[in-house]
Image 1 (spheres, protein in one colour):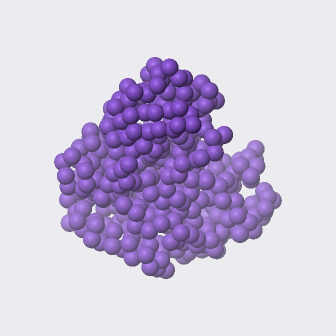
Image 2 (cartoon, helix red, strand yellow; image 1 turned 90 degrees about the vertical axis):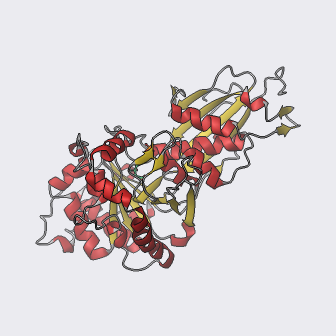
Image 3 (cartoon, helix red, strand yellow; image 1 turned 180 degrees about the horizontal axis):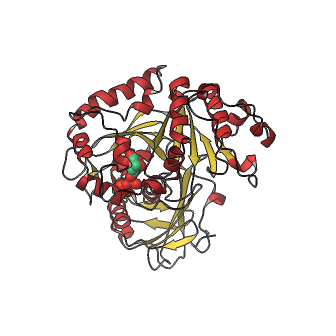
Length: 435
Ligand code: DP6
């Protein structure tokens, strides 16, 4: 038995990345176990710029399981949290730290309560995959605390039950989520295709257009899409083709780092018997009822203002960059190397300069060296940027001052890590409560 007389607290802190899908997961065949209707592929983003940090603690002095997210206490009662907790607890193993006088047997874990404190260094639920990083970190940190011996693939199947996209955040680099065939979801796991070093000059620029919570959750959006969209049914039926064609293209792309990079941007365009529907069309629910309010997505507004998408397309055509959106409003642009990224950032800053009250330092965050590569040191340099040559005659050199809240420059990143430095823990080692 764990020694109840001692008021010890055992803690673990971990950091887990977000990911951005280039072949999207959109639609479930089993809502409880979170089993998807197709395979998906994502790029894990550098946790230095976007990540969740989670501290988990266990102590005989805790009277119930408790969780804090971004400094506010939240309920752990949802099925998603409960399922992940149950799955991890059932795999817990004996633990002993003689120095601290802590001994916990496999059986003890069932009765010991946990405190969980989680923090995102980016806007929660604004379409930046916060649930992906959050559930991946929840599962990874609890698994390490409870001395769970399962490999990352098995942990990915547990994280999947918290939020589908979370399973891909268990690995760094380029990751595939195999949809699997089994009814119990045991083969619906993530696998790493290539690590983050494989393509280390890939640059990802996220235009954060709104940091408020997205109004339609992925869960609801997906359910309505599966129930009402004809396009998605073709896609689901076509998983084999999706695998054989798109995944193959993508694999060749990442393994060979081929020049025709913009295919990433097109990889979600696929042909069906009915023409060439695009998954983006499905994601933005052009044939889902009720329609997910695409109007709420500022970036779509930008496109109707003849700014965003036309601009992106112009640049994609000429400079081999790509773009994608998740269910939230933020545009994600991908440049195949730093040179292209610098050109891309110049164009972004030309069209979407900061609001006069915003300084450049808080307008472009993350890997600021791209700003340097773009030759932009201060706001005067932004104002002096010439209209991009490729837009001449296509679109007016319009400016959308203040439409973007900020840009995050990032790159492919590593998978989850434990943070050994106790000063980084979010919970106090004395009280087990948020610091
Ligand atoms: C558009 O993983 O947030 O980002 O499983 O219901 O929690 P739930 O959904 P979630 O959906 C992510 C959808 C997406 C595409 C993707 O990441 O593949």
